[in-house]
Length: 129
Image 1 (cartoon, helix red, strand yellow):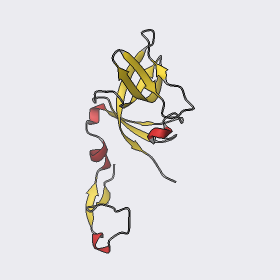
Image 2: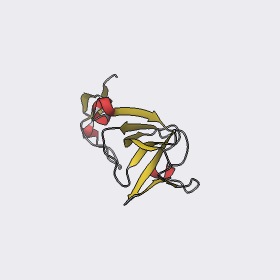
Image 3: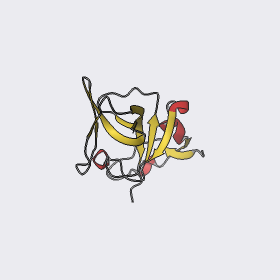
Image 4: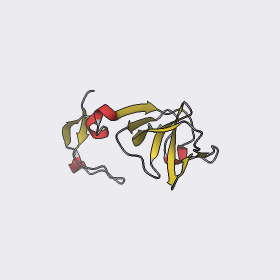
């Protein structure tokens, strides 16, 4: 991937300072987003069940399979042969997949389900239009 120039200063949400016009030579976006290359994947989102978590249709998720999932992690999982992205809820032995959109149901995982957390979402690449 081509290195992309990056400013060495921070961007302000107010008015920019003309004195902060200096650019650092470049940044490799992979170095910034990918902590463990052999375990990291980019996955495109299809659907609207996670919009209240800021994950929209056509976003690209950075998923690290080496990160241990914990309660409230956003995960990519395989449930009965289908991939899904949901918020993981763990309370004792009770596991649920939480949708971040009230139009979609939460899913309780039972012992009859074929369930695996495939990886933890570490970044979301979203294009504002």
